[in-house]
Length: 287
Image (cartoon, rainbow, N blue to C red; front, top):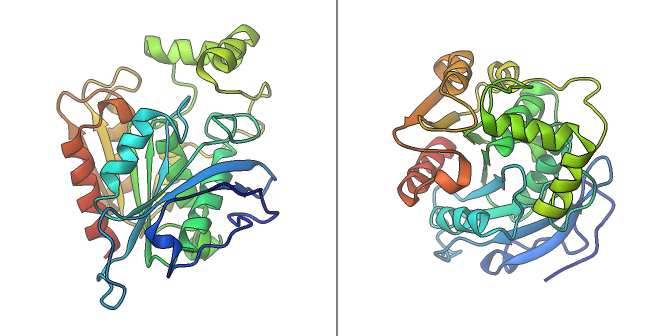
């Protein structure tokens, strides 16, 4: 179903009812703190629970896709379907992507999009939230966890109980690989932004960051005590393995690193087995 946006972060005009909507998919638009409309989808768990005997951990994943993805892309839907084996899933299109409003800031204001989606996910009555992000979305889940939650002065309802970051950069402005040099051309050049808009359906903001947001590696130490999983492929063509190693070092004892042999980049490279292991980790971490 589709509804018109409401004027509050994470709130749609149709409020989730944990006793009914939780058993069926739902689609709506959310409003972020800065007023951007975010196209969002709720998928219930693949196994419908007997509400008279709820599970010990009632988990909802909030999925943050990579740059140029959106909630309807097949590679995003594949991840959604894999994670529904372990809990409900809220997926959404970042600003500037798909049917969402606004323009992409390539990882800066997208934290507000994720916060709205997390708050909406909590409205379905699930006891735990796990954020999982890929590539750009991987950097967003790290910064979101650092900025939201009671320990960090944020709103509890917009915070997360576990964080999974897949194929994320550790630092900004990285141009050390050919794919990243192409991405910077898309973002920084008028012709590149036109190619992004009409070729990839992604609308990019023309303004540079001001101020420069907290980098992923700077955000990671602020996530504790929230459980953190960092996943990266040893054949990632965008960000080499020094990126996840930097993140893991910054996380210290509260973070866990999975360096996956033979894996490439982000959702396209995540096997069904890896997604199942991520789902299992989230269940244990959020328990």
